Image (cartoon, rainbow, N blue to C red):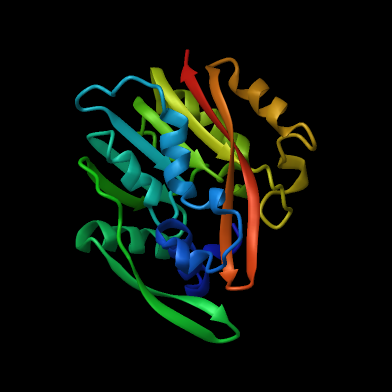
Amino acid sequence: MSKNPYESQKLLGEYLLFHYGKKEEILPWKSGPIDALNFPQRTVESLISGLDEFKLHAKALDVGCAVGASTFVLGKYFDEVLGIDYSQSFIDAAKKLAADNSIDYSYLVEGEHFVETKAVPPNYRGDIDFQVGDAMNLPSSLDSYDLVHAANLICRLPEPKKFLNRLPDLVKKGGYLILATPFTWLEEYTPRSKWIGSGDSKEKLEELLSPWFKLEYEEDLPFLIREHRRKYQYSVSWGSRWIRL
């Protein structure tokens, strides 16, 4: 596999800001897409809204957790949560947040000017752990989770079907799968031959999952990634909740 693009300090700062930044840090303007903030939290809480409380000792898996905000949010609802990401620097940051309840980092203003700030995780009750891992080659020991969460992951994998084929074992029967994806297929991440659909990705994903999962709920989830104070990435993920048959 080619060099991991998610290991630069600049990108680490962008993702810590994306996951933990205050509104005034991310979007210091009077106008702007405020509804696109707090995406890691919304991919959990919007998509599990309406479900009954999970039973004691329920466990969740967060695949492609990046710097861990969604993992901590899952820890509000589950007794045991494991966050996995391919980036060593992302996992190191998430582990420091879990151990110290904060991390100092810097984010770009413009040019070569950075600002120092601090990230603090949301409150949680569960047992949180993080580890480096490849979503396409997860250990066989991982199975039977009450809920599996994967946000903005599948269109960044070289072979997304490898991850999708693993899901029936990861989610126990009656459990839930939470997916969010903007279907931003790019050849720098996924060879064209491995894209799931081209213009019909949503329908193709439903087709691939339908033997094992039933779609229960869907919602469009906008998100905003700040590159510097005058440049942003605005995208809309398709959020979905599935029950394991």
